[in-house]
Length: 398
Image (tube, rainbow, N blue to C red; front, side, top):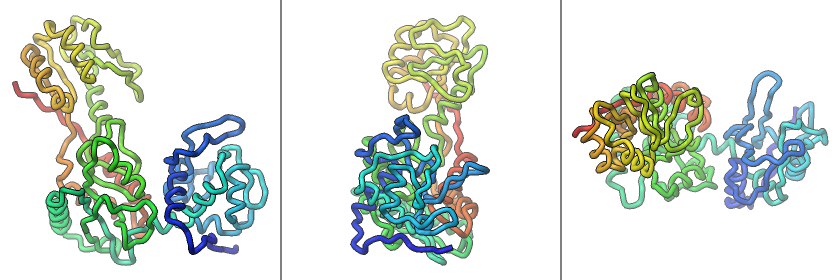
């Protein structure tokens, strides 16, 4: 077997690598739909099949090849090594570097030579990026510092450092952990230099317009324990919250369904066994036997529910997300005045409890092993989250 590194010009533009990263993860805005067979498909990404680390995978006959730089630059028994031109042909025509037709499951991308070159350059660096912030004996973990909020960042850094020290584990798989403050604004989507970025970032504050979330995604590093305006439609793959999100709270509320419980929602609910549930809209009369009412409503839906049902809530209990109580305190207070009780569902724990964060880091680093990459760390963190994310119910005081 002959191994050759991908030939990349020493004048590689960081901008080209950034464009390649956007193409790989499906965040590029100038990419036409791909084709599978003769059918155009939107939303297909390289990372979706080959993984964020480009290592491929699969089981049995469904093997997805690795496409990182070393893999593409390797001559195998089936094909010669790729170069940039062969790589472009594989993307648009579906022929491998030896000219053989690739599987029909491999999408054919309408990608220009410039786009293919950018993707090629990104793949040449993806393995190094996966180990950014990791050396033979140290791991560099950043604690997010947001512009104008330096004191909060320092508190988080001191708290996490103390919580880690209290756990009494000086090294994991032969590596010690260094915690450093990292300015979110300094994160670069194009840099794979281990001296410029941490391996992982802890406790960034997300803003409502999604700009911080976008910057974190572009930087490509795992993120743990964010706080602030968490996305209502779920976290991006790179960001792991140890607390239950909106979906977790909704799932806990739906689990209350029963013979004397009515679920009232103003938007379609999908997934799992939800389709089997009887879900009412805000203006529909409640069954006479209803004792508990689960509300999954937006602002307009809650106003509509109150207008229709306020005079019929005596002796009945309302259960709703805490976020609804916080966003509509006056209206919820009016309902509380007539209902028997109002119960709020909320995620368990404090997002800035660094003792919980330190425990999650330790468990994930142990599980990820000595061959540590950002992808293996994310997988370990997600497994930890499944074990720890919970929802609790609290009574809203009159």
